[in-house]
Length: 158
Image (cartoon, rainbow, N blue to C red):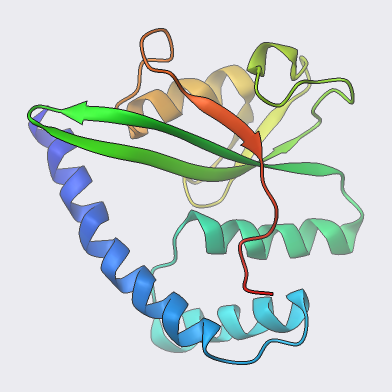
């Protein structure tokens, strides 16, 4: 638990840097999603800045769209207790190979070929393996926590 709490605190520090990056980036006029992704990529390269799951997913989305690859952007959230503290766990990631008739809110319908592709968490793995890793990464137990999955749009400012 001590190691997990240290990881949680480190993420909180990173979040301050991410918020600064977003504020600076969003103050620039972006004419398109490609323009936004280019400016984001340049800022990361120039400043060596840490970016969060939203930004990594935006960059991945642009790459997948350019290659004509079908994917879904997924928003996952729940509330997690860490001792006396409570935190909202939120994350966005990409799923490739999701069944066309899948109900996004129910991972059991995503299909056997569904793959979680998440550059922020450094993984491209089967659905089962990805959910297992998310349990470890976000201190979740899918059998006990009410985890919600929704399809999400781009995170960049319009």
